[in-house]
Image 1 (cartoon, one colour):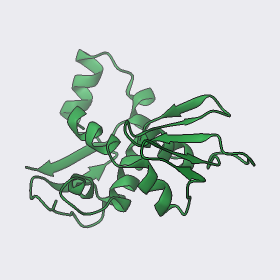
Image 2 (cartoon, rainbow, N blue to C red):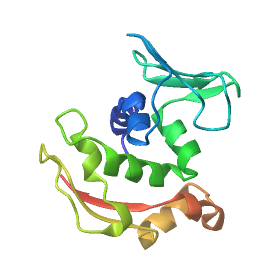
Image 3 (cartoon, rainbow, N blue to C red):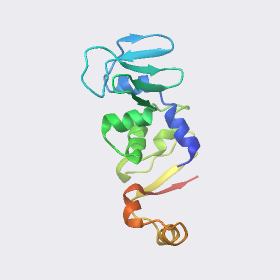
Length: 156
């Protein structure tokens, strides 16, 4: 995945993500929204979303991050699963249409609204030439690395 794709995912509004989960702010201003933490039980709001920077912080835990970090924590899933999940829930409009390029569970490929990319397949099996490159050139132990690797095929 390109760095520009990750930066676009990070622009997906955290407030909107939380609203889709049925979590509403206790207080909202033009620059931030204050919640009771969705990550733990609490009576006083200590979970803040900076709507200008699109970042969150849980003051009770002293942790924070982007929408990707929040989704991984709330859903208990990996980075690739989080990207797929955000892709399923993202609004279909010009700003976030790229998220719909990601297809959950290797189902039918989806064409982006802007027509830029079409996902063909997501697989846990890497091509042999790539496995050879990782082991011989990069000296990576495939047994340790495989849980973190996916082969993504797409058309531009």
